[in-house]
Structure formats: C-alpha cells, structure tokens
Image 1: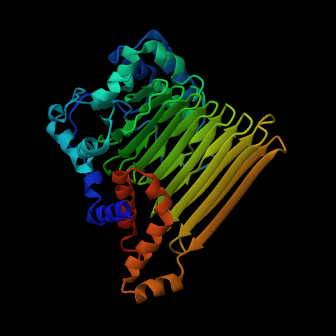
Image 2: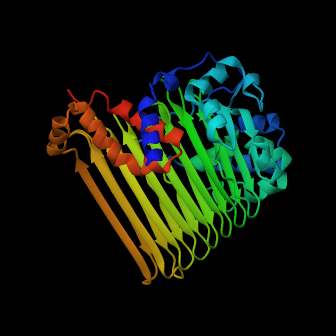
Image 3: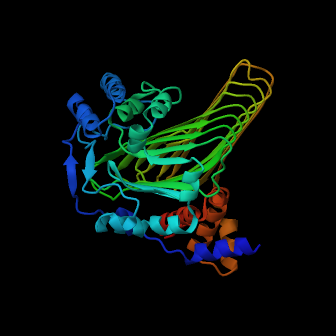
Length: 474
C-alpha cells in the first residue's frame, strides 16, 4: 500500500511539457550525408565505421533489395514520405563517452531535460544515449561487467565481438529481405544496443537506451540486438523522441531478441517521436524452450506508426506476453499490434492492446496469430480495447489467425467504447472538472500498461497522455 501511495505521489509531482521533446539544438555535425540513399552512401557508412567485409556485403544486399521493392500499400498512407529527401547518416560532433561530463554541453542538456542521467543514477544497471546516427554516451555498472554481461553500442560490439554479432545480426530473426524498411535498415543502420547475458545471470536492474533524433529531415536507424543465454534474465528499456519540424523525418530501427532455453527478456519502450516523424519500426523475438519474452509498448507522438512486435515461439513451453497502448491525436495514424507464431507444443501467448483516439486520430490494431500443425496444446489470448474520445476519431481492428491444429485454446475479444456521460457526471459530482474527469477515466484505462512500466517511464507515459488530453473539453 505504501509503495502504491508513493508511486501516485511521484506521478502527481512530475511536471512535463512538450518543449522538453520538441525543441531542437543547432546542428553541429562532423558528417552529414546529402538527402537520399545511394550505393556510395552505403559504402561510405561502412568505411567510416571500419566494418568487416561481411557487414558491408550485408548492407549492400539490403540496399539492392530496397531499391527494387515497392512501398507497402496495405496499411497507412505513406505517399507523403519522400525517401529521397531524408538524410540517412548525420554524425554529431561528439565522441562516445562513459561520463556525462564529457558529452558536449548542448547534447548533455538535451538528455538532462528528458531525465536520462537522473534515471541512470537512481535505478539502472547501465545506460546508453544516441544522438542522430551516433551513440554519445554508454556505461555499464562494474558489478555486471564482472559477471560477464556485455552492454555495448552496436557499432562497438561489431568491432569487439565480430563473430558473435555475425552469428545473430539479421540472420535468423529479422532477415535482410524481410520487408522494404528492414532492407533499408540493413543498408544504413547506425548505432543502437548490443546486450549479451551469460547463462544463469539475472540482471536485477534494467538496462536502458535513449534514442534522440535532432537533425531536420533526419533518419534514425539504430539496431538493438539482445541475447539472453540459458537461464538468464534481463530487462531493457528504450525511449525515443525527436524535435518537431515541418519537414518529414523517418525512424526505421530494428530490434532482435534471442531468448534461449529458460531465459527471460522484458523489453519496454515509450516511443514519443514528433508528429512529423514516420515510425516504421521492426521488432522480433525468437524464444526457445521454456523461455519468456515480454513486450511492453507505449506509442505516442509520430504522425504515422507501423509497428507490430513479433514473437516466434520456437521451443516447447515458450511464452510471449505483449501489452501495449497507442494514442492517436489530430493528424495521427497509429497502426500497431502484435504477432505471435507458435511453432512448438505447449506454447502460450497473451496480447493485450489498448488504444485511445482523439480529435480525428486513427488507431488501428493489426494482429496475427499462427499456430503450426505440431504446436498442439497451444494457448493464446488476444484482447483489444479501444477508447474513442469524440465522434470524429476512428478505431479499427484487424485480427488474423491461422490455425493448423485442433488441439488449441484460443480466445479473441475486442471492445470499442466512448466515455459515458454518466461516468463524467458522477466524477463531476465529486468535485472534479469535466476535463479532470475525462483525464481520470483515461488514466484508469491505461493503468495496466503504466503499472507494467518502470516508474520513470510510467510517469512519463501517464503525463504525456494527460498533456494530449488537455483541451479536450470545449
């Protein structure tokens, strides 16, 4: 009870406004690519990073597939995204450091406004921070280094552990030819996170990375690769934001999780890109016998999102739990969901997806559950809850299920609701204003996601949604 009271108190004391995310620094880069993507640029990225030949060839494979593959047309309209105007590689005038004091002042202050150094001091095992195309800060507590945990900038990991990276990087989880934006990612990826947790090691405090885009018409393409070896456990938190410009920007990151036998990975993210950003992200996990992956996602900000974290349950008794919230306000199209592929017997998955639409915003749940012929005794539950704030907003649900065996236990439930006048009247009779009453109802709606997030991110998500709800009345 005391913990709950303390958590609520911190929520109330926390103050947030859009300026901490929407403001941009003056651009100071040591390299800024011309808009558009070419083979020459792909080769230049690899050259600047001093990569092995096999990585260059992987990049070139991605590029050649990308240029001959059509844009997807099955989801949100992407016609306003001109890929020839995006700057795919912008390197800030900053070297990676393990001390915040050595990070250039303007960049450091950006991350201080967002709260990253303070969060690291209070409750993290390690933290990384990326600014445009490069990681500028990275640090891991010594206790975890001594236990064999690897937590590195993805570029650094490629240099220090080339064979380990080669084995897992865009091979069996997210292949280079997976879809158009995975191909683009393979060609121009830069920065990101690499984590390896040895067998039996349980990292008790979360590891975190924060990705900040600053350049106008910029693109960010970080790669996150996490391997939890047999019986290991790790929590990873990812935050993202960008300043607001009139010109379009693009985020097309990639997350690959490998959950070995009996291991557990909890991956949490709050994606808060600016409204001019297209968030076209790819996230996937391979889960072995008795392994568990947990996805906790908050999707805010971007004008257009296409994001569907996927779990491939490869071993017997593997499990996937997905919990997500998407908020769509004016001019936003949040197309999100989850995918689970059951390949082995006795596997279990749960998907709980919530969405809020306001002032003409469009939220869509797009899900996919596949149960293979030999995946007998599978259990899967999908629950979608949508909240419409007004008559102009839209909520869509597109659940797809492909079941190849009869020995399964499957459930799907979808609800769409509006805030009722009786609820508002009751809360107003207790002394709340109409706007406060609506905010309280919305806070209750998102509570399962907020409770699952680490405290700092729970507070941020709650306050961001409160901010978006301002002005709803009148």
